[in-house]
Length: 335
Image (cartoon, rainbow, N blue to C red; front, side, top):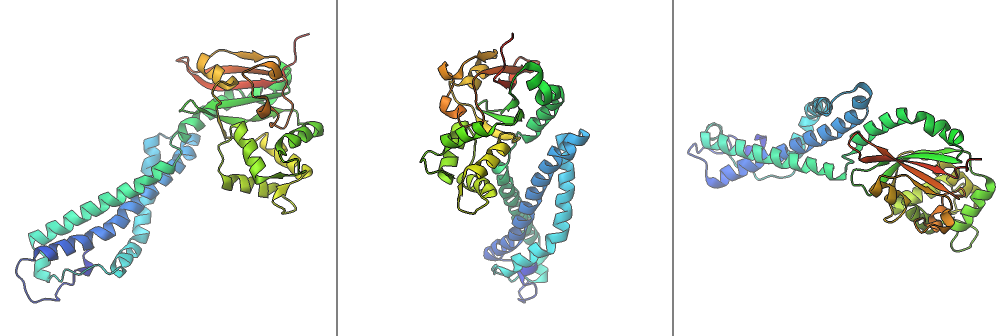
């Protein structure tokens, strides 16, 4: 890291000045910022990827996944170390103009070591900023999902018919208690008439098509956590004509897909049906959603299928906490 120190450029072999030591520390610090940033960033990202994939598959601990991530990080440092050094040498850092004798002096070595320590620490801290944009609860949620998928596989795949309901869904409660992750809806395909009625509910402007603004408004009412770019991508995926709007046939394709979407993060509406079950831990049976104050009828009209009744039951862990919800839609009354 001291390649820019200009050794031998001066004949003076006395102690380096304070300015020379400062410049030498800077020359040693800057490359280490790059090393620290890359090292921590690669370790965090690869550790998280390994933790949520191979870790779940083979039962590896989070620390083991982090260790494998560190291996990848060290290999990356070896491969790209020269690139970082070359970049640091091209950014025009001031040369301390130290001689070979001065470079061997204790004060010079201490300044270089101090600069390197500060640089790598700053780089590692910058690399840690990626944690702010990561889903830190993903491993735990995937683990619970894996367990619940096995436990409720029969319920999800055939429970709707066994219990006599049109649709059945399993939702995992997020750690903040304000969101759930839908594991998809299972049940009979929505009829063309149901999709047509949903289309009318989405088409707020009565224009005969659904644009990005209308789709975003509907998804927000359903509790989806999407940004404008994601909504635009969703619409473009089914906009066969490229008009920026969805006509009825295109809308049917969209709804037939998103009804069964997995890993969808939904906001729990305060005072709604899910919120009631989450806060009480008790099963909730609503035989007529049109007359129950807990139900947001406008939101139910946007699901893509008719909702007449809802039965929601909590999934409890060994400590009695609600970790999931089982929702049955349009359960038929016993004869």
